[in-house]
Length: 261
Image (tube, rainbow, N blue to C red; front, side):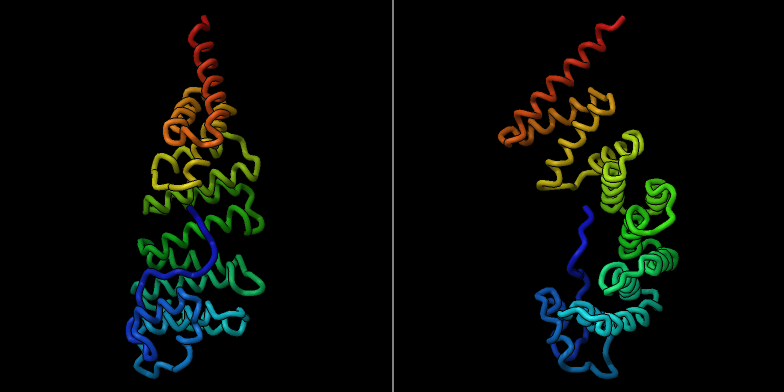
């Protein structure tokens, strides 16, 4: 599922002067970027260490456009390479314009995501950036006549199953919000469920939603599948009684279809 917020990194920095590399990233995760910025690393600073420095400027609180501009300059320089650091820097640079600057620039963020995808299309960061680009097209960019179609065109460029799932889910939920016809977005929610990997409350909510939307779409067999799954997985949940009632309705509809001449 797609979640926005605090920057979290999976790549450990190497060669940061003031702190060991893993400790440097931990300081950022612990929301203590000032310790990263306390001492300059000098001329021998590695690319990964510079990435950590940019991330520290990005995470520094209170956030100011001056600090974010310093991060953007570091990311812009690092993004010129062709390694994993370059891909991550390019992604974070786009995120700055999408989320962090006081005045977001969605068009600029979209342009940067596109540049990353063109340069390093199979990078995890490029693939993740395509999901963010689709979100911009679904909700933020102006003059997108068919928002679902715009996101669907990006879906074809994503090769990572988990990210395909996330974008299917986002297109489906956008269809609900934008009041699109069920036939336009329900298959995306089904596809997200089929790929799997959704857990917790989000999984529970999705199963119920798929059952209910399938009923509204005139697909009682599909609704039955999801309502039965819900009762198998969450038999003691407070919603189980209401789901059981909807399951009975789905079965009645199926029975009525069977007796039609």
